[in-house]
Image (cartoon, rainbow, N blue to C red; front, side, top):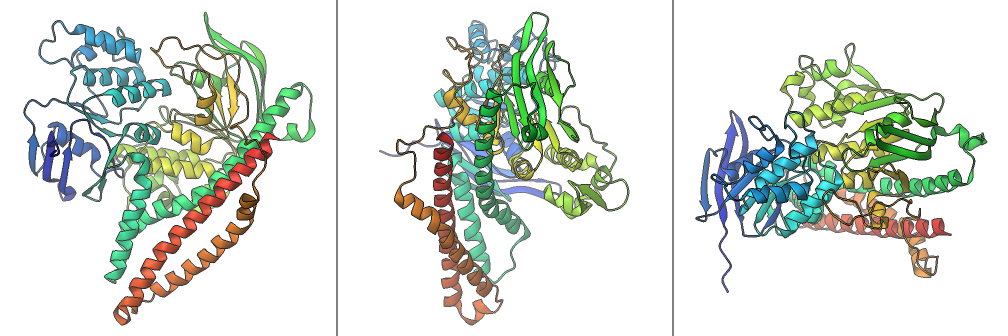
Length: 606
């Protein structure tokens, strides 16, 4: 049977802004029912390409085919709500023509997303506005749904509702998002817009990093075969992708150990009287809360919650919008007094507080002046760094140091705000929704900085993948006043909740009133490693060290600038061997990590 023709196709698309060519030669097609993630670095042109597909913007050059009768609906990053008095009016505006007789569709979506329908868009929260924009895009039942950062400002419950809708949607979907877990769950195909070139992989986003690394490695081999110096962009990508994975393996090992330590701390906290001074445990105390409660009128936000935050803990706070996450942070940091109970703060704390919505940048200042008014060095966590070197850590080019803040893109401004916040001297970092509107490059950067941060961290975020990579424990607030903590990742917490995350608009979901059991996973019945696993745990580090030495030797030989011209066959053989050895090293490290994590889980369960 011949394949069904695409419902949308674009060939040879080119677009430039002045002298800056955003992309050229872009070919893509969309089939009925495709679920596509569109990914690429910040500023690569993803949003612009989505506008071209939607017809909102014209390319400089392109051949476009759309099957007759195909309806396309597009939700931009910043939807326009002007002229609407209620969010219900926003949703209804998505109906084609007069929409008379189809208003019930709006009511269905309003109930599904739990939208405050009569609220004025001008005073509605970012999450409510986003849900209304999504409902407006969906109500016309399009054949192609184009979504630009749909999860921004949504809480986890709303994101899960959107995941369900997309999975059941019969039309095609193209989505741009920084939320990795969302992309993994909804996409079956990946478009990668990379340095002006469009690449396609007929697999979902969960395979993107593996595919991306293969593409970059192949580029490096091809460039070496031509005896050319590596392009700056390719070198940056190689460092940011290949090296990051290896660094993250070590960070993951440390994170697993910290989660085990937090689990033990919580067991101790459950056994001791919080009024008693306990030596070493007391000296490491950052925050101590006992039976704190807080209500605003008849609405209970926190009810009799007790915890201790110990030095080095990295704690995520999750829950639906309006559950009281920011209020809890204010209670724990003594910015707000509880109605009952007490909070103590440890001595010698240096707190840095980051709230993206309240932090501002002077648009007239340069990046250099924003970080350092005088001189050329900045004190960062006890060490002096040159301003340009510190900016490079946050993915800024050296020539941007003297650019005004007003010339930065939205993603670049977010990066600069993080650079300012993380440069403050602190041993206690409080981040309230730091991941909103961040692109993947900045999220990776923030993850690395926070993983290496030696102080204590409290972070509110709806980004599930980010939390899984960062936190030692999760404080969960379902929204009914109960609060409890789970030592482990958000994904582990989700598996332990009796009905998983209570999502707005879903019926028959009872909120758990008791904390889940603290163990992150069920150990095997043997409660110990097998002989072969223990042997591999001892032997694999030696294998990895040997492979690292072999890789270093091959790289040294390939560094000979005359090798390609002198002995082409030897150059090709070494290039191939390098790729194979790097893959063997990665497999070896991953295998060791799996066994080590299993060992730690088994020991923690004893």
